[in-house]
Image 1 (cartoon, rainbow, N blue to C red):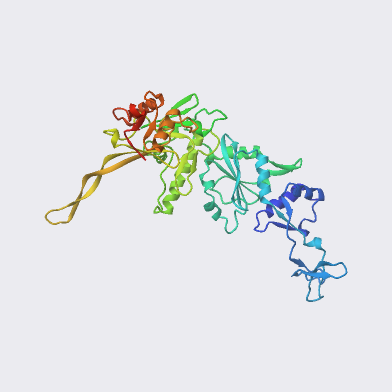
Image 2: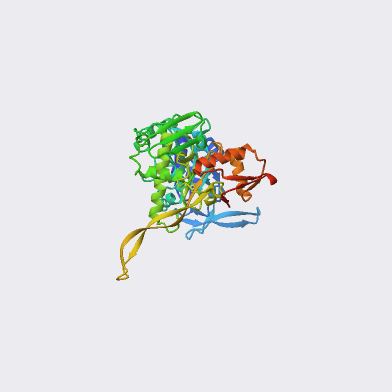
Length: 477
Protein backbone atom coordinates (compact mmCIF):
# COMPACT_ATOMS: atom_id res chain seq x y z
CA UNK A 1 0.00 0.00 0.00
CA UNK A 2 1.32 3.44 -0.92
CA UNK A 3 1.90 6.03 1.80
CA UNK A 4 1.87 9.79 2.08
CA UNK A 5 5.58 9.82 1.27
CA UNK A 6 4.83 7.84 -1.90
CA UNK A 7 2.39 10.52 -2.98
CA UNK A 8 4.89 13.25 -2.09
CA UNK A 9 7.60 11.51 -4.12
CA UNK A 10 5.23 11.49 -7.08
CA UNK A 11 4.79 15.23 -6.58
CA UNK A 12 8.57 15.81 -6.57
CA UNK A 13 9.00 13.76 -9.73
CA UNK A 14 6.14 15.41 -11.61
CA UNK A 15 7.25 18.90 -10.48
CA UNK A 16 10.19 18.65 -12.89
CA UNK A 17 7.87 18.31 -15.90
CA UNK A 18 7.02 21.24 -18.11
CA UNK A 19 3.33 20.54 -17.45
CA UNK A 20 3.34 19.57 -13.77
CA UNK A 21 -0.22 18.22 -13.66
CA UNK A 22 -1.87 15.01 -12.39
CA UNK A 23 -4.97 13.46 -13.95
CA UNK A 24 -7.64 11.93 -11.76
CA UNK A 25 -6.60 8.43 -12.85
CA UNK A 26 -2.93 9.02 -11.99
CA UNK A 27 -3.63 9.65 -8.31
CA UNK A 28 -6.78 7.60 -7.80
CA UNK A 29 -4.75 5.26 -5.57
CA UNK A 30 -4.01 8.03 -3.04
CA UNK A 31 -5.60 7.97 0.38
CA UNK A 32 -8.29 10.70 0.46
CA UNK A 33 -6.90 12.22 3.67
CA UNK A 34 -3.37 12.26 2.27
CA UNK A 35 -4.51 13.88 -0.93
CA UNK A 36 -6.58 16.39 1.04
CA UNK A 37 -3.50 17.42 3.07
CA UNK A 38 -1.44 18.15 -0.04
CA UNK A 39 -4.28 20.27 -1.35
CA UNK A 40 -4.56 22.02 2.01
CA UNK A 41 -0.85 22.87 1.92
CA UNK A 42 -1.38 24.36 -1.50
CA UNK A 43 0.93 21.90 -3.23
CA UNK A 44 -1.95 20.65 -5.41
CA UNK A 45 -4.73 22.78 -6.84
CA UNK A 46 -7.47 21.77 -9.21
CA UNK A 47 -7.00 23.21 -12.65
CA UNK A 48 -8.73 23.02 -16.06
CA UNK A 49 -10.33 19.70 -16.97
CA UNK A 50 -8.64 17.40 -19.46
CA UNK A 51 -9.57 17.97 -23.11
CA UNK A 52 -8.56 14.44 -24.18
CA UNK A 53 -9.62 11.11 -22.69
CA UNK A 54 -9.07 7.42 -23.35
CA UNK A 55 -11.86 5.45 -25.03
CA UNK A 56 -13.16 2.61 -22.87
CA UNK A 57 -15.72 1.14 -25.30
CA UNK A 58 -13.63 -0.63 -27.94
CA UNK A 59 -10.69 -1.94 -25.96
CA UNK A 60 -8.19 -0.30 -28.31
CA UNK A 61 -7.10 2.26 -25.68
CA UNK A 62 -6.95 5.17 -28.10
CA UNK A 63 -7.32 8.73 -26.87
CA UNK A 64 -9.74 11.19 -28.42
CA UNK A 65 -10.62 14.82 -27.90
CA UNK A 66 -13.53 15.22 -25.53
CA UNK A 67 -16.74 16.61 -27.01
CA UNK A 68 -19.28 18.30 -24.73
CA UNK A 69 -22.88 17.43 -25.66
CA UNK A 70 -25.92 19.27 -24.36
CA UNK A 71 -28.31 16.98 -22.46
CA UNK A 72 -31.84 18.26 -23.09
CA UNK A 73 -33.24 16.26 -20.18
CA UNK A 74 -30.93 17.77 -17.56
CA UNK A 75 -30.13 21.02 -19.33
CA UNK A 76 -26.39 20.40 -18.69
CA UNK A 77 -23.48 19.70 -20.98
CA UNK A 78 -21.89 16.26 -20.59
CA UNK A 79 -18.51 15.01 -21.82
CA UNK A 80 -18.47 12.48 -24.65
CA UNK A 81 -15.53 10.50 -26.09
CA UNK A 82 -16.06 9.62 -29.77
CA UNK A 83 -14.87 6.27 -31.13
CA UNK A 84 -14.50 5.29 -34.83
CA UNK A 85 -15.47 1.69 -34.03
CA UNK A 86 -18.35 2.03 -31.57
CA UNK A 87 -19.41 5.61 -32.04
CA UNK A 88 -18.23 6.56 -28.56
CA UNK A 89 -19.73 6.94 -25.12
CA UNK A 90 -20.24 9.42 -22.35
CA UNK A 91 -17.46 9.78 -19.77
CA UNK A 92 -17.75 10.74 -16.15
CA UNK A 93 -16.78 14.40 -15.57
CA UNK A 94 -14.72 13.25 -12.58
CA UNK A 95 -12.40 11.38 -14.96
CA UNK A 96 -11.48 14.70 -16.56
CA UNK A 97 -10.48 16.44 -13.35
CA UNK A 98 -6.82 17.48 -13.03
CA UNK A 99 -4.62 18.93 -10.30
CA UNK A 100 -1.61 21.18 -10.93
CA UNK A 101 1.47 21.30 -8.72
CA UNK A 102 1.81 24.83 -7.36
CA UNK A 103 5.55 25.40 -7.12
CA UNK A 104 5.12 28.81 -5.48
CA UNK A 105 3.47 27.05 -2.53
CA UNK A 106 6.26 24.45 -2.45
CA UNK A 107 8.86 27.23 -2.38
CA UNK A 108 7.05 29.02 0.46
CA UNK A 109 6.74 25.84 2.52
CA UNK A 110 10.41 24.98 1.97
CA UNK A 111 11.46 28.46 3.14
CA UNK A 112 9.36 28.03 6.29
CA UNK A 113 10.66 24.51 6.93
CA UNK A 114 14.28 25.70 6.78
CA UNK A 115 13.63 28.80 8.90
CA UNK A 116 15.17 31.14 6.33
CA UNK A 117 15.44 34.92 6.67
CA UNK A 118 15.75 37.72 4.13
CA UNK A 119 13.38 38.79 1.37
CA UNK A 120 12.35 35.84 -0.78
CA UNK A 121 11.43 36.44 -4.40
CA UNK A 122 10.69 34.77 -7.72
CA UNK A 123 13.67 35.04 -10.08
CA UNK A 124 12.20 33.18 -13.06
CA UNK A 125 8.42 32.58 -12.85
CA UNK A 126 7.65 28.90 -12.46
CA UNK A 127 11.35 27.92 -12.51
CA UNK A 128 13.64 29.69 -10.03
CA UNK A 129 13.03 31.16 -6.56
CA UNK A 130 15.31 32.80 -4.00
CA UNK A 131 14.06 31.35 -0.71
CA UNK A 132 16.23 33.28 1.76
CA UNK A 133 19.35 32.62 3.78
CA UNK A 134 20.54 31.17 7.04
CA UNK A 135 23.71 29.94 8.67
CA UNK A 136 24.45 26.32 7.77
CA UNK A 137 27.71 24.48 8.43
CA UNK A 138 29.51 27.52 9.80
CA UNK A 139 28.58 30.16 7.23
CA UNK A 140 25.57 31.95 5.79
CA UNK A 141 24.07 30.31 2.70
CA UNK A 142 21.74 31.73 0.07
CA UNK A 143 19.11 29.09 -0.70
CA UNK A 144 17.56 28.82 -4.17
CA UNK A 145 14.76 26.53 -5.40
CA UNK A 146 14.99 25.47 -9.04
CA UNK A 147 12.58 23.33 -11.06
CA UNK A 148 13.23 21.77 -14.46
CA UNK A 149 17.00 22.09 -14.24
CA UNK A 150 17.62 19.29 -16.75
CA UNK A 151 14.99 20.31 -19.27
CA UNK A 152 16.18 21.33 -22.70
CA UNK A 153 16.25 25.00 -21.70
CA UNK A 154 17.69 24.33 -18.22
CA UNK A 155 21.13 25.68 -19.07
CA UNK A 156 19.58 29.09 -19.83
CA UNK A 157 18.38 29.47 -16.25
CA UNK A 158 21.89 30.28 -15.05
CA UNK A 159 22.26 33.10 -17.55
CA UNK A 160 18.89 34.51 -16.44
CA UNK A 161 19.78 34.33 -12.73
CA UNK A 162 22.93 36.27 -11.96
CA UNK A 163 21.81 36.23 -8.33
CA UNK A 164 22.97 32.61 -8.07
CA UNK A 165 26.38 33.40 -9.54
CA UNK A 166 26.70 36.50 -7.35
CA UNK A 167 25.69 34.72 -4.14
CA UNK A 168 28.65 34.21 -1.75
CA UNK A 169 27.62 30.65 -0.85
CA UNK A 170 24.65 29.47 -2.95
CA UNK A 171 22.78 26.22 -2.31
CA UNK A 172 20.35 24.81 -4.88
CA UNK A 173 17.28 22.81 -3.92
CA UNK A 174 15.43 20.91 -6.64
CA UNK A 175 12.32 18.74 -6.51
CA UNK A 176 13.88 15.57 -7.89
CA UNK A 177 16.53 16.12 -10.59
CA UNK A 178 19.67 18.13 -9.85
CA UNK A 179 21.59 20.13 -12.45
CA UNK A 180 25.04 19.10 -13.60
CA UNK A 181 27.64 19.51 -10.84
CA UNK A 182 29.93 22.52 -10.63
CA UNK A 183 27.53 25.46 -10.43
CA UNK A 184 26.68 25.17 -6.73
CA UNK A 185 25.89 22.41 -4.22
CA UNK A 186 22.51 20.94 -5.22
CA UNK A 187 20.14 18.77 -3.15
CA UNK A 188 16.93 16.88 -3.98
CA UNK A 189 13.84 17.54 -1.90
CA UNK A 190 12.84 13.99 -2.79
CA UNK A 191 15.67 12.93 -0.42
CA UNK A 192 15.43 15.72 2.14
CA UNK A 193 11.73 16.44 2.62
CA UNK A 194 8.84 14.58 4.22
CA UNK A 195 5.38 15.50 5.46
CA UNK A 196 5.34 15.46 9.23
CA UNK A 197 2.56 16.58 11.56
CA UNK A 198 0.63 18.15 8.72
CA UNK A 199 3.49 20.24 7.30
CA UNK A 200 6.61 19.97 5.17
CA UNK A 201 9.78 19.06 7.05
CA UNK A 202 13.30 19.32 5.56
CA UNK A 203 16.27 17.44 7.00
CA UNK A 204 18.49 20.39 7.92
CA UNK A 205 21.03 18.23 9.76
CA UNK A 206 21.70 16.18 6.63
CA UNK A 207 22.06 19.36 4.61
CA UNK A 208 24.53 20.84 7.09
CA UNK A 209 26.59 17.67 7.22
CA UNK A 210 26.78 17.47 3.41
CA UNK A 211 27.82 21.12 3.12
CA UNK A 212 30.37 20.75 5.89
CA UNK A 213 32.14 18.13 3.80
CA UNK A 214 31.95 20.23 0.62
CA UNK A 215 35.52 21.45 0.36
CA UNK A 216 34.73 23.87 -2.42
CA UNK A 217 32.26 25.68 -0.16
CA UNK A 218 34.51 25.77 2.89
CA UNK A 219 36.59 28.87 3.57
CA UNK A 220 40.32 28.62 3.07
CA UNK A 221 42.15 27.35 6.14
CA UNK A 222 44.71 30.15 5.98
CA UNK A 223 42.13 32.91 6.44
CA UNK A 224 42.03 34.93 9.64
CA UNK A 225 38.49 35.51 10.86
CA UNK A 226 37.00 38.59 12.48
CA UNK A 227 34.87 38.05 15.58
CA UNK A 228 31.44 39.31 14.56
CA UNK A 229 28.50 39.78 16.97
CA UNK A 230 25.49 37.63 15.94
CA UNK A 231 23.32 40.67 15.21
CA UNK A 232 25.95 42.63 13.25
CA UNK A 233 25.14 44.01 9.81
CA UNK A 234 27.35 44.83 6.85
CA UNK A 235 26.48 48.53 7.20
CA UNK A 236 28.32 48.59 10.55
CA UNK A 237 31.57 47.27 9.09
CA UNK A 238 34.23 49.71 7.92
CA UNK A 239 37.34 48.73 5.98
CA UNK A 240 40.26 51.11 5.59
CA UNK A 241 42.59 49.95 2.83
CA UNK A 242 46.27 50.79 3.18
CA UNK A 243 49.26 49.98 1.03
CA UNK A 244 49.73 46.43 2.34
CA UNK A 245 46.97 45.97 4.93
CA UNK A 246 43.35 46.65 5.68
CA UNK A 247 41.96 47.70 9.05
CA UNK A 248 38.49 46.41 9.89
CA UNK A 249 36.33 48.24 12.41
CA UNK A 250 32.95 47.10 13.71
CA UNK A 251 31.40 48.66 16.80
CA UNK A 252 34.16 48.60 19.43
CA UNK A 253 36.34 46.07 17.64
CA UNK A 254 39.32 46.77 15.39
CA UNK A 255 41.64 44.32 13.63
CA UNK A 256 44.37 44.63 11.03
CA UNK A 257 44.70 42.10 8.19
CA UNK A 258 47.68 41.48 5.96
CA UNK A 259 47.74 39.74 2.60
CA UNK A 260 48.24 36.28 4.12
CA UNK A 261 45.44 36.81 6.64
CA UNK A 262 43.06 37.36 3.72
CA UNK A 263 44.43 34.46 1.68
CA UNK A 264 45.95 36.84 -0.88
CA UNK A 265 49.27 36.49 -2.66
CA UNK A 266 50.18 40.19 -2.51
CA UNK A 267 49.42 43.58 -4.07
CA UNK A 268 49.19 41.97 -7.53
CA UNK A 269 46.40 39.63 -6.39
CA UNK A 270 43.25 40.35 -8.41
CA UNK A 271 41.01 40.27 -5.34
CA UNK A 272 43.22 42.85 -3.63
CA UNK A 273 43.13 45.05 -6.70
CA UNK A 274 39.35 44.75 -6.87
CA UNK A 275 39.10 45.63 -3.17
CA UNK A 276 41.15 48.76 -3.91
CA UNK A 277 38.76 49.65 -6.74
CA UNK A 278 35.88 49.59 -4.25
CA UNK A 279 37.94 51.66 -1.79
CA UNK A 280 38.87 54.31 -4.37
CA UNK A 281 35.23 54.57 -5.42
CA UNK A 282 33.90 54.99 -1.91
CA UNK A 283 32.25 51.56 -2.06
CA UNK A 284 31.39 51.40 -5.76
CA UNK A 285 32.96 50.12 -8.93
CA UNK A 286 32.76 52.14 -12.14
CA UNK A 287 30.06 51.31 -14.66
CA UNK A 288 31.04 48.65 -17.19
CA UNK A 289 31.17 50.24 -20.68
CA UNK A 290 28.94 48.71 -23.34
CA UNK A 291 32.05 48.15 -25.45
CA UNK A 292 33.38 45.56 -22.98
CA UNK A 293 33.14 42.04 -24.36
CA UNK A 294 30.78 39.54 -22.78
CA UNK A 295 33.76 37.38 -21.83
CA UNK A 296 35.40 40.22 -19.89
CA UNK A 297 32.08 41.15 -18.29
CA UNK A 298 31.64 37.55 -17.11
CA UNK A 299 35.21 37.50 -15.76
CA UNK A 300 34.53 40.70 -13.83
CA UNK A 301 31.35 39.26 -12.30
CA UNK A 302 33.31 36.14 -11.36
CA UNK A 303 35.98 38.24 -9.62
CA UNK A 304 33.27 40.07 -7.69
CA UNK A 305 31.77 36.71 -6.75
CA UNK A 306 35.17 35.47 -5.51
CA UNK A 307 35.68 38.65 -3.47
CA UNK A 308 32.19 38.26 -2.02
CA UNK A 309 33.00 34.72 -0.90
CA UNK A 310 36.30 35.84 0.62
CA UNK A 311 34.62 38.64 2.57
CA UNK A 312 31.88 36.39 3.93
CA UNK A 313 34.51 33.84 4.96
CA UNK A 314 36.44 36.45 6.97
CA UNK A 315 33.40 38.37 8.25
CA UNK A 316 30.56 35.98 9.11
CA UNK A 317 27.82 38.56 8.63
CA UNK A 318 24.43 37.59 7.26
CA UNK A 319 23.54 38.82 3.80
CA UNK A 320 25.28 39.85 0.61
CA UNK A 321 28.15 42.36 1.07
CA UNK A 322 28.34 43.31 -2.63
CA UNK A 323 25.19 44.07 -4.62
CA UNK A 324 24.84 44.88 -8.33
CA UNK A 325 23.98 48.37 -9.54
CA UNK A 326 21.21 47.80 -12.02
CA UNK A 327 21.80 49.02 -15.52
CA UNK A 328 25.49 49.79 -15.01
CA UNK A 329 27.22 46.44 -14.70
CA UNK A 330 28.92 47.79 -11.57
CA UNK A 331 28.61 46.89 -7.89
CA UNK A 332 28.41 48.68 -4.56
CA UNK A 333 29.38 47.50 -1.11
CA UNK A 334 26.95 47.45 1.78
CA UNK A 335 29.87 48.10 4.11
CA UNK A 336 31.98 51.25 4.34
CA UNK A 337 35.31 51.13 2.52
CA UNK A 338 37.88 53.74 1.66
CA UNK A 339 41.61 54.13 1.18
CA UNK A 340 43.69 54.92 4.25
CA UNK A 341 42.60 58.45 5.13
CA UNK A 342 46.13 59.34 6.17
CA UNK A 343 46.86 59.78 2.49
CA UNK A 344 43.61 61.69 1.93
CA UNK A 345 42.94 62.85 -1.60
CA UNK A 346 45.54 61.23 -3.88
CA UNK A 347 46.65 64.58 -5.36
CA UNK A 348 47.31 67.65 -3.20
CA UNK A 349 45.82 70.83 -4.70
CA UNK A 350 47.87 74.02 -4.85
CA UNK A 351 44.89 76.11 -3.77
CA UNK A 352 41.23 75.63 -2.87
CA UNK A 353 40.10 77.59 -5.94
CA UNK A 354 41.38 74.72 -8.12
CA UNK A 355 39.04 72.21 -6.43
CA UNK A 356 35.54 71.27 -7.47
CA UNK A 357 32.99 69.52 -5.21
CA UNK A 358 29.77 68.02 -6.58
CA UNK A 359 26.95 65.96 -5.10
CA UNK A 360 26.05 62.92 -7.19
CA UNK A 361 22.48 61.62 -7.67
CA UNK A 362 23.15 58.74 -5.26
CA UNK A 363 24.36 61.09 -2.49
CA UNK A 364 28.10 60.53 -2.88
CA UNK A 365 30.54 63.40 -3.23
CA UNK A 366 32.75 63.84 -6.32
CA UNK A 367 35.95 65.85 -5.77
CA UNK A 368 37.98 67.00 -8.77
CA UNK A 369 41.21 68.95 -9.17
CA UNK A 370 43.31 69.71 -12.26
CA UNK A 371 46.55 67.79 -12.62
CA UNK A 372 49.08 66.71 -15.22
CA UNK A 373 48.84 63.31 -16.89
CA UNK A 374 51.89 61.48 -18.23
CA UNK A 375 51.30 59.55 -21.46
CA UNK A 376 53.17 57.96 -24.35
CA UNK A 377 53.15 60.18 -27.45
CA UNK A 378 54.45 59.36 -30.95
CA UNK A 379 57.75 61.03 -31.77
CA UNK A 380 57.74 62.60 -35.26
CA UNK A 381 61.04 62.78 -37.10
CA UNK A 382 61.76 66.29 -38.47
CA UNK A 383 63.79 64.89 -41.33
CA UNK A 384 61.40 62.21 -42.62
CA UNK A 385 58.11 63.38 -41.04
CA UNK A 386 57.55 59.77 -40.04
CA UNK A 387 56.77 58.35 -36.64
CA UNK A 388 59.65 56.94 -34.63
CA UNK A 389 59.75 55.55 -31.11
CA UNK A 390 57.20 56.85 -28.62
CA UNK A 391 58.19 59.59 -26.17
CA UNK A 392 56.91 60.44 -22.72
CA UNK A 393 54.73 63.57 -22.65
CA UNK A 394 52.43 65.45 -20.32
CA UNK A 395 48.99 66.92 -20.82
CA UNK A 396 46.39 68.65 -18.64
CA UNK A 397 44.01 66.28 -16.91
CA UNK A 398 41.32 66.29 -14.25
CA UNK A 399 41.63 63.93 -11.29
CA UNK A 400 38.23 62.95 -9.87
CA UNK A 401 37.51 60.74 -6.88
CA UNK A 402 34.06 59.78 -5.59
CA UNK A 403 33.43 59.30 -1.88
CA UNK A 404 30.64 58.07 0.33
CA UNK A 405 30.10 60.54 3.17
CA UNK A 406 31.09 57.77 5.56
CA UNK A 407 34.51 57.57 3.90
CA UNK A 408 34.98 61.28 4.66
CA UNK A 409 33.89 60.73 8.28
CA UNK A 410 30.83 62.87 7.59
CA UNK A 411 28.19 60.19 8.21
CA UNK A 412 27.47 57.59 10.87
CA UNK A 413 27.83 53.83 10.23
CA UNK A 414 24.28 53.68 8.83
CA UNK A 415 25.05 56.43 6.30
CA UNK A 416 23.19 59.23 8.07
CA UNK A 417 25.09 62.53 7.62
CA UNK A 418 26.67 64.08 10.71
CA UNK A 419 26.15 67.77 11.49
CA UNK A 420 29.27 68.58 9.45
CA UNK A 421 28.07 66.30 6.65
CA UNK A 422 24.74 68.10 6.49
CA UNK A 423 26.58 71.44 6.25
CA UNK A 424 28.59 70.17 3.27
CA UNK A 425 25.43 68.98 1.52
CA UNK A 426 23.78 72.36 2.14
CA UNK A 427 26.76 74.16 0.60
CA UNK A 428 26.63 71.94 -2.49
CA UNK A 429 22.87 72.32 -2.91
CA UNK A 430 22.97 76.10 -2.49
CA UNK A 431 25.70 77.02 -4.92
CA UNK A 432 28.44 77.23 -2.29
CA UNK A 433 26.59 79.80 -0.12
CA UNK A 434 25.24 79.39 3.40
CA UNK A 435 23.83 81.95 5.84
CA UNK A 436 25.11 81.20 9.34
CA UNK A 437 26.92 82.89 12.22
CA UNK A 438 30.63 83.47 11.94
CA UNK A 439 31.35 81.19 14.91
CA UNK A 440 29.24 78.28 13.63
CA UNK A 441 31.07 75.24 15.01
CA UNK A 442 29.71 72.81 12.40
CA UNK A 443 31.23 74.86 9.57
CA UNK A 444 34.52 75.32 11.44
CA UNK A 445 34.80 71.57 12.13
CA UNK A 446 33.93 70.77 8.51
CA UNK A 447 36.66 73.16 7.37
CA UNK A 448 39.29 71.39 9.48
CA UNK A 449 38.11 68.02 8.21
CA UNK A 450 38.38 69.06 4.54
CA UNK A 451 41.79 70.67 5.14
CA UNK A 452 43.11 67.39 6.56
CA UNK A 453 41.59 65.33 3.75
CA UNK A 454 42.71 67.50 0.83
CA UNK A 455 46.07 68.59 2.25
CA UNK A 456 45.35 72.18 1.16
CA UNK A 457 46.51 75.22 3.07
CA UNK A 458 43.97 77.46 4.79
CA UNK A 459 40.25 77.18 5.34
CA UNK A 460 38.05 76.06 2.43
CA UNK A 461 35.44 78.67 3.48
CA UNK A 462 35.33 82.43 3.76
CA UNK A 463 32.92 84.55 5.82
CA UNK A 464 31.32 87.94 5.06
CA UNK A 465 30.34 89.45 8.48
CA UNK A 466 28.15 92.16 6.95
CA UNK A 467 25.84 89.55 5.48
CA UNK A 468 26.57 86.69 7.89
CA UNK A 469 27.26 84.71 4.72
CA UNK A 470 29.62 81.79 4.38
CA UNK A 471 30.90 80.81 0.92
CA UNK A 472 33.16 78.06 -0.35
CA UNK A 473 36.54 78.82 -1.88
CA UNK A 474 36.14 75.74 -4.06
CA UNK A 475 33.74 75.44 -6.97
CA UNK A 476 30.44 73.64 -6.32
CA UNK A 477 27.98 72.02 -8.67
